[in-house]
View 1 (cartoon, rainbow, N blue to C red):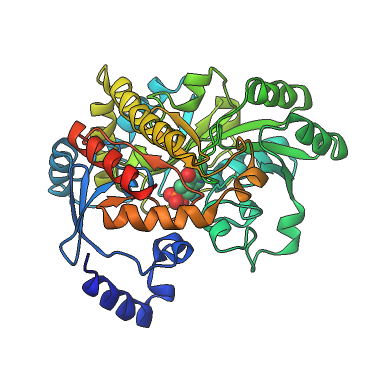
View 2 (tube, rainbow, N blue to C red):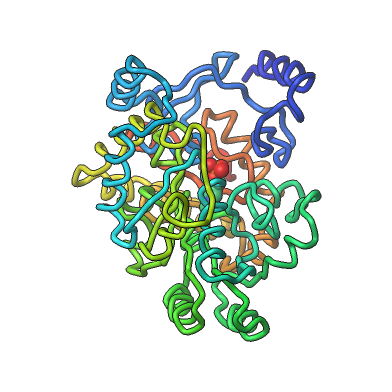
Length: 425
Ligand SMILES: *Cc1c(COP(=O)(O)O)cnc(C)c1O
């Protein structure tokens, strides 16, 4: 496989962009390779600048659940573009997208649209702090909630692969307000809550973590969080930036049947454009400006072109069998990998929910961040490289999830399964 053009572009990029990229994981640092520069995408495939074709299981890190250049989305965007790109004034599309989200996710009574997942979590915790009058936030080790000061503590995702789960530049005063607990370990939450009585505004959690690799919630963990929060007057925030409209149309909360107080969205709701959102209980959301005194604003928030892509995406996803098919394809692939590894005696742990799946090279089940850190990252690197060479584009890190799209065909899946067999001997 030739990658000269990509290598050259990366050299050039580093002269003007810090690290040659605009988001750290893209640099392929954790797999020790030079990143592939993409020229175009179509359906389940992406094509790099050297003309190599890949089956894409990253989908822009989650948004592209309909694949690249989905016709419904492109048509909607073209139509929106023709009427103007931004007004900084209300448009009808914003209402339509908000109504679709409300209809899909019953815990949402009121919503605010923003431009990214990070903005959504930042808005949600500010609202939670404003509503409760408390300053502390509890998060889980390895959960990623975007690139915002209060939540960049043991943050998972790119922060983990850089070997620095915490970020420099975050004032100690912010870190002190962020309490940590272990995912799937309710006792660790109880401990923090008991040591900080009446001080915690919110517990924020990825209901199904996807940023320390994919981990499933154990029975009773999320419902335990729900009752603990109710008892202590703490707001429960589900960060569904990844899982929203990904594991199911109603997100993880629909599948797991737990209602958070606030939910954050991003990725899929923008259909490949920058859209995020946060919302939930009306009494909490009414603290947000202009109704209340928790300030939050955005010049391009609810952008008409971005919102049109989101509406088109959700419209397609609303069709009946989409999630059943996505789930079936995801679990087929996971099972292929499982049975192959079993045959070869390669220790493997897998999880899958809807159109999201993940694996760890590990003997031991992975229940939380510390478990994830102990898995065989060396084996992942070798596997990643071999898959890339076979034309399969996976997330370039052992601590990320993979995404199925409606554009993936049976042929794509068969080809991927073959590549897995060749890559794991
Ligand atoms: C991607 C992600 C974010 C951040 O979203 P951006 O759009 O990258 O700012 C926040 N939370 C979770 C769970 C995510 O997966």
